[in-house]
Image (tube, rainbow, N blue to C red; front, top):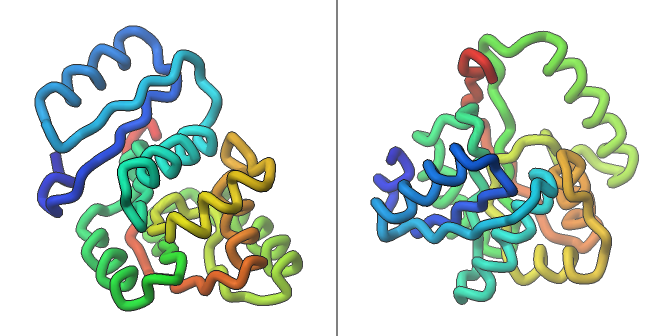
Length: 185
């Protein structure tokens, strides 16, 4: 419901959820005409779901796609800043850089280790947070990468696509984004 405030169409990917969740998603998609539900019959992973969304957005004629993970950790009030930067830098990947207020320390340190590997692989620190799933992708470049390479289907997707975009010369614009960790997340 919160995302409806931005007037954006939504491609909701059901990555092989169980019957109860699948029914809830169908109900949501029927209730809101701006949501297109794409059904998957088996769970293939977060990366596979994002790739399906990128392919579907491209098929619908969009030039960019905003990725928002469904686990509730992204503060949607930051969406306008990501969209504004995408308009200002249309050839760039816009990437959330999480602001950790109450995040568990294990998440922070685990991410930092990944960042070191990303910085080594790109020979730069242009990608401030390769694991954040709050992004705007330029679709032509992103679809080109996922069409040519075997990009991860699970949680490895976010850092891998960020590195591959960097290797392709796609600039990265980082934007601070508030992250929260709801109970049970």
